Image (cartoon, rainbow, N blue to C red; front, top):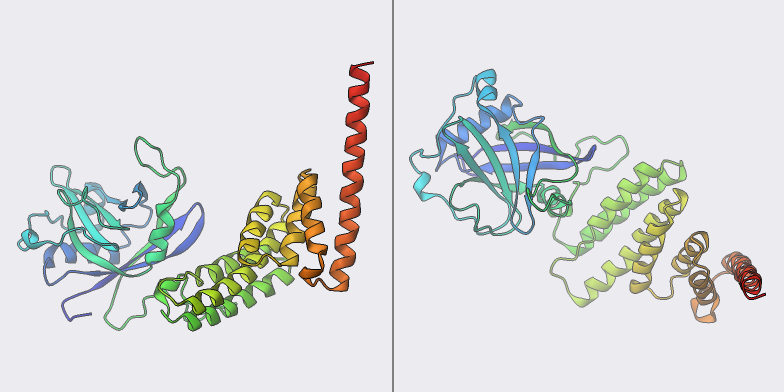
Length: 352
């Protein structure tokens, strides 16, 4: 960061769940008055309570609306976009650009953050900074369902905190002191680019999730498992590194499936286990869990297929697993037989 640039942050919440902090570096050297205004608004907590109210997939998220009343209440002077230096603004030609659009008549503003290049923002918006940490939180917004007419998200996307950071101040992306031992950033983009580092971090986060799972706290366990899974995003890597990531991904997905089994979300169990089996066709636990979920959902043919596959010699199931799988296979075959008998009885009555 150069001496003329400053940082601000926004804490994002999606549907009552905090998803991370977005840290932006402002283009103070080029747009000093506008950037000073943004820093003042952030330092006075002005963006807290505002929402992301427009999501254009593969382009940008938009919101952070500050009204004329807020400017008056916070004692911040409104700066028009035509500040000297505005003509030399950047194009919206990449991801992570923080952009400002003002309404001079109303004395209000709104902010946007690009997720890719955007042509529709260029005419009425000026790039005032860039995301330096927390792009993962921005990407989480991109795939939220929206109203097709207004592009407004169908669930709440709220700014629950904001601020201006001093030069050497910790940005708060990585927890300085976490009670559960997780000091890793929420998103892997803010961590190391080395694949081995990501795998090691994912494994440590997963272990913390295991502790919560063993204590019966499925909600916290799931948050850790999902975070561990995010750390396995491949990026650019070799074939050998991809194989390592796939192996770890199958393990983490297995943990997520275990949570979904315990919370009885059987449709999710089937979906997750199918993904695991794409990575590892010999995963006995995935076959058993998908078979069990299919049995509960009355998809008996699929359950039988999975239990039989789990018992095949090439799967190398242990004795305890074999005993449990055989028991459920017998239950499934009995249920199929009972179902066939009921159907036969029903049809015999119809044609009697």
